[in-house]
Amino acid sequence: MKSKSRSKLNSQLYAMLLPNLILFISLTVYPIVWSLRYMLFDYDGIRSASFVGLDNFVRLFTRDDVYWSSLLNTFEYAAGKLVLIIPLALILAMILNIPFKGNTLVQAIVFSPTIMSSAVMALMFYLLLNVYNGDLNRLLLSIGIIQEPINWLGTSLAMVSVILVAVWGGVGNYMVYFLSGLQTIPKDIYESAELDGATYWPRLFKITLPMLGPVLRIVLMLAILAAFQDIQSIMVMTEGGPLGETQVVFLYLYQLFFPISTTSAIQPQIGYGAAASVVTGIILGIITAIYLFVSKKLDDIF
Image (spheres, rainbow, N blue to C red):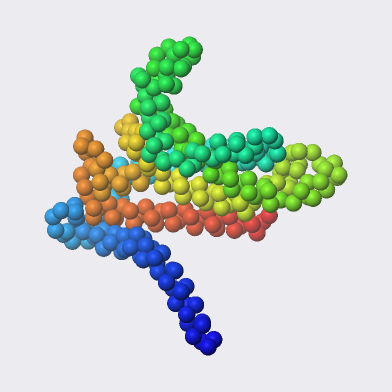
């Protein structure tokens, strides 16, 4: 009887896991295998694929300056976003960890951009930052801060603009992680520190931040991966412009597979895009491994 009962339980478990397994194989495993296959071919999705061996990789490492500049832009974008979003999320979490009237409402307001569609959010800011009809320029002109409209998305300000939009859209998510971490710190520790005469700053650096270490490492990992994968808002707001200033690597890969406009100089290059995607995945894997190694060493030290 126990054998039959156990067999029935296992069958139920496998049945519940089967939909997720099918989705994982079809949406994750198959695309990876597909990319590994076509990275050695010259293929545009229409004509028959022709085998080119390592030519795609030779082109990537020797002749494709756009790829490497987009990779540098990605690092710039990720660094700018992380420098702003992590401290801001932590500060907001510490403020909202203090009970006050309307605390829940403020949390909901700060978190609300996180549940908004990235494309809708980007379109909203595209209209807001429009050089001629944007409300931001109208406001600044009306109060005399500027004398002529600023082209927020068509000059060197474009990268700053997309970073600020990304921070606005994601800070609420990381704030929730920090807030949950702060609420798990026992209040007895703070009370003991106060009795010993510890002021706010010693409590912050010797109690709060060290005890938030595990949450901080998770938030950093999520923020790094999210920053490298952000393309929707940039696609809508700048399409990689001006002159490639905001061209990040995943947007470039997307353009290799699917040109995003009729004026784009990039033609569908599925085989080459597959090779570039594999190299990008390896680079991200190396970055993740370095982060995990450094994080583990910091754990051992502290």
